[in-house]
Image 1 (tube, rainbow, N blue to C red):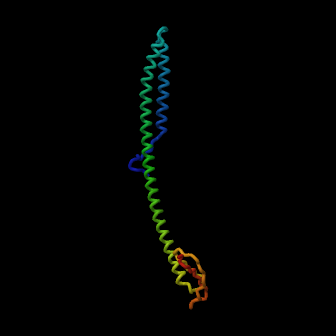
Image 2: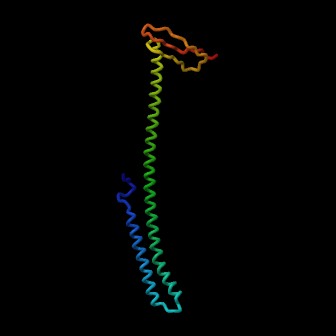
Length: 169
């Protein structure tokens, strides 16, 4: 998915590698060719002065070329870093959205669980005389719990038990 900061075209590293290879081969050829020319022109006594001048010439050619290549690679690196930062920001935004959705789902689940507990509690207290076993639980801190049988109701033949407790005094 292209973003507004990223270009539509992809950078081709093969082109850059090929360019560096061609420049390197050309420089090596140039150095060997210059050495041949200099060997035929150099007088016997003053060799160091000629090689010094040739070294300055070769350094003057290679250093700007290497500087240009270094600056180009620096620009490529900065572009890649910008892309990674942009992608990281997009991922963080998506993660924040997912987290917000998870929080909302957790709130909904908590609400549903509370409603379900209330419905079960209400069902247990209202159906104490129905068929089956029903337990009535008080939600306050009580001690001395007593379990007693509540008589069978007019409807249904099941037993209903209720936990009755006395408040701690």
